[in-house]
Length: 85
Length: 159
Image 1 (tube, each protein chain N blue to C red):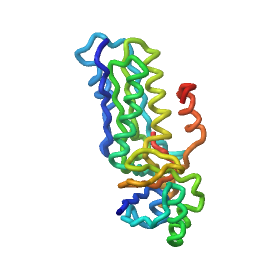
Image 2 (image 1 turned 60 degrees about the horizontal axis):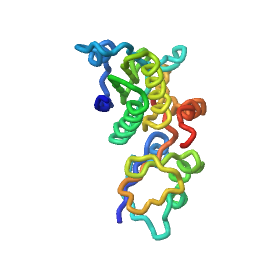
Image 3 (image 1 turned 135 degrees about the vertical axis):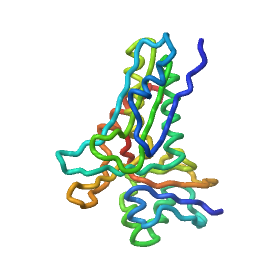
């Protein structure tokens, strides 16, 4: 299944693209697994995700924590802590 | 028991008119005794800043502020609630965000507006990037721990 990954703010800048569609390899079950897998995909990813604890995640446009299962996610967004208001 | 109010939430690039938004909630009504409005503006940081660029997550920004606004109308007896958040480039002195809460009495209106802003700061998917007055790009504004703490004080003990 194809999953759309969307990046915002400095996560987007460091990875170097606003979004991409990926086929997640077997064994990627949680958000934490996803972040670990992405870090291995190249320098930009490594730079963006070097402190995974600060990365905020939304699945299908809802906030989730890093233990959340990602099966069935159409859209997963990764971003820094929010600074609106 | 009156029907639960549907809050107005708008995410937009354009500026807004604070007075017109307040009038929009109160016009033609005689049951509102208190209106609290909060406007957040872009500061120039002692001349160092030429603009803020607000990035947002389209769709989720509307949905998340909608959830927060719905929680506010369930928690406080409000007769009107409007939340507007801008995105794109905002110059010093311009508006960024507006919350208008209308109620029979002031306490509910003050508290609901305060709650909205505290939650919006830590949960609404917006990110601010600075543009410096000297032409350099500046960096992403860092989230403040004090904002996260401010949001926590509204949680009920069961959460």
